[in-house]
Image 1 (tube, helix red, strand yellow):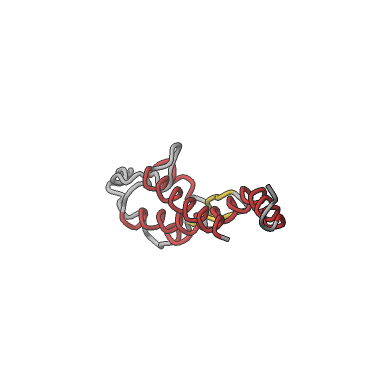
Image 2 (cartoon, one colour):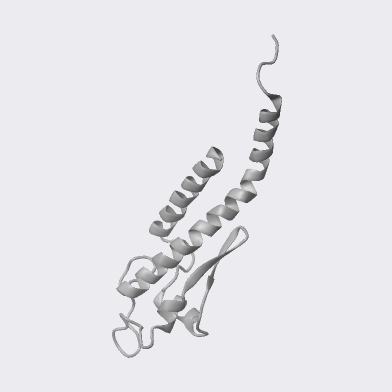
Length: 131
């Protein structure tokens, strides 16, 4: 049976599939970073922990807002560096708010965050396979 079709297209597909894991991870990281930033800032503004629970009471009573100047709330952001996503704090004391008030996840990711990341990954995979 003779070969029908263009073999170079098959080679191109093989090359695209080889490059897909790194390229896909980078595009997912680039898309996830702003989405997680929005989620973290929305949780912070609503007075909830990253897990959707009411924020714990502070030493001086109810700490629902944690906002005096708004610097911490406005400066929490996620950035993509290659295939990784990391948080960038704009204030030196924000890291203490993570442990005490859980303004960001500690340990396991919240279900809502995991679902958001999975949806973005599916969308980016679909885009990568279509290209």
